[in-house]
View (tube, one colour):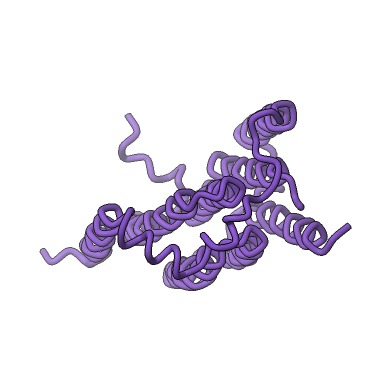
Length: 100
Length: 170
């Protein structure tokens, strides 16, 4: 039997690898991939708690997180395509028209 | 050492390793493929946790549909290789790595030092709540409103994606 703490530590590790990727990388696509990694590590926590508590709500929440992630990926990639068409780059340091 | 623990360590090492490789690779396509490997390991964890339905849709929806969308966009944009995370020094990378390591240490310390309130083993009911049958019945009774709102969300996402990505008409 695996203790719940193992899952929590693993999930925190993956979440913070994703967070470091969001802060450090400048390619918009890889930033999106890092965000997906963070969403998935949170899903692991939700499903682990759901299984250890015998309550289905955590798995339902993981299911809805997956739906929101699908919507977010579609919209985010559409924004990336629109930006690339306008500026010919996906480097986030060069996309600064909202920066004042 | 039982099979469950061996599988946990195997999946855990592959998951963390592929996450690290995903963040550090230079080519976005390689990053996306490592992320798919990571998602497959997560599906393995869900199976260990008796969440069969979530494991299956993790493979079909995430590793299948969403990552194919990412790969399509990466190949459509035909991106040049950019600089890898590992070559070249910058304060931004130092801050990102340092902050993440500090917060990780803090979280691990909190998790390992507060064992009082956490459940110690998997609930016996977890064997039956992860099945498609149980999740389906709950989804159409107790979680009916969020389920229906999800369809609105997906419709808005489809319309939004088309409006954002199409060429300007004027």
